[in-house]
Length: 356
Ligand SMILES: *Cc1c(COP(=O)(O)O)cnc(C)c1O
Image (cartoon, rainbow, N blue to C red):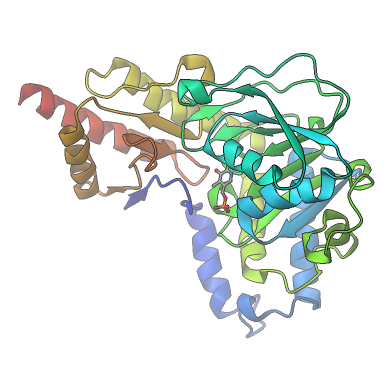
């Protein structure tokens, strides 16, 4: 079965296999990895290796803290302004899709929010243009690097005189970028990093100095950093799944994963651009290498293709309920040959359909 779902997503097979072994017996200790005490030595090793791998892959110095938090993407939408949008400040958000607009909605509970660029009027089918001039009084500028539902992805980032914050939930470690341009990065695990239940946060120490003081410990980036992510019982198994994926990511290398992402996306877009049945509504410059959205102009045929694909062992390709059509997610766990298998099935269906 091939799972092209948007998340929880397919992990590399090596990772899933190892996880299943470690659930029974972790490092021949006779203990399961899910029962490791979170303040014990074994978990301390897991945490410190995971933190080191994140910094290595992102090429970050000790100016950054690595945190593991619960509550998923939406919790970050809330605690980011809770921590950094206080005392009458204004934060700016680029409105490039559903998740970006959710982040905006959450931030408005805490302070002033401006939206200097939005592609809402274009149904988010293209990327909004980030302004070149960024006012220095903004508390931070928030962008969503990959728009999971609409299949768009930023390939350039602004030079920013204010802290640059990014939601990288759906494209973290799928490509090489200059992570040090960002002051705070967050990414839910369930797409490219591990299983649901934990969110990776990387934050610059200099930004932490500006965090609000009156935030409860579990919601405070500064407190989480001071306690090395152990304010309370962390999701031990979810963090362990991230460690295994990080090891896998490191063993392949970000440069190679970058190439793989390009190749997988190129295969699928090339097919779509030639197809007489399937079309991709996203213009070339805005296209995502992670989530490829496409459609057919016939609703019955759309349903037929979903059935046809399911019978061929292909799952998770239905578009988000707000957009319809199709969406294929090409996270790191998907191989090039998986994509070839998919385009073969699409080609066969198309031939039959055009004949019929
Ligand atoms: C999936 C996703 C989220 C949502 O995360 P939850 O953990 O379900 O709240 C946030 N942002 C982006 C870009 C996503 O792709």
